[in-house]
Amino acid sequence: MKSFRRSKKALSPVVASIILIAVTVAVSIAVAVWMGALSGGFMATEQLTITNVQFGPSGSNWVALTVNNTATTSIVLNDLYINNVKQTSFNATQGLPYSLPANTGYVINATSVTNPLLASGNNYALKVVSAKGNPFSYPATMP
Image (cartoon, rainbow, N blue to C red; front, side, top):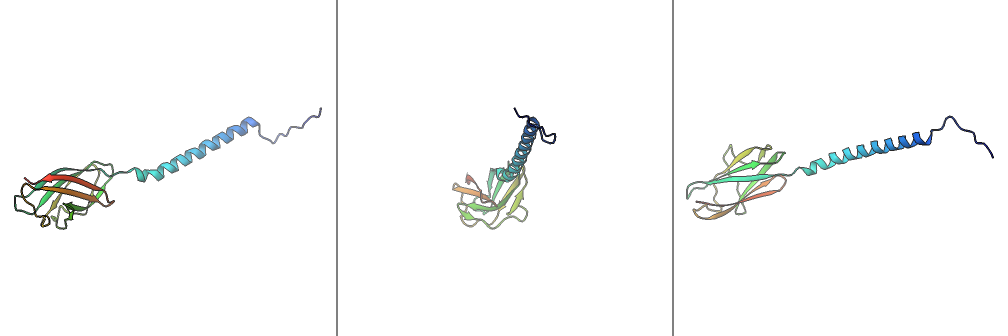
């Protein structure tokens, strides 16, 4: 039989296997962190609840909506619709657009509501729309 010379410069198969496994684990951790950072922005959802609606006295033309941001990120409130009609007149300190921080509330005070005319006993579909285009609806009846 021929005898083979052993090279003292080569790695043993065990050491080579350990290095391959370590490199594979390091690359998989890097890919997992990268994918987590990419998908983090898509996981944030807007959650807004309308908890209260107040109408002015019969024949008046204002509505006050109390909204709460129950999400973990802020929401920019852009528009208010009453019966699918965009409202444009608001109280100077309680209007839209407004950036609502996470876990806080806000009162939107729409003034000069002329379309639709507000009348006692009528039903109204109130809708707040965020900057991302998400609608948050609430049905209300004027007392």
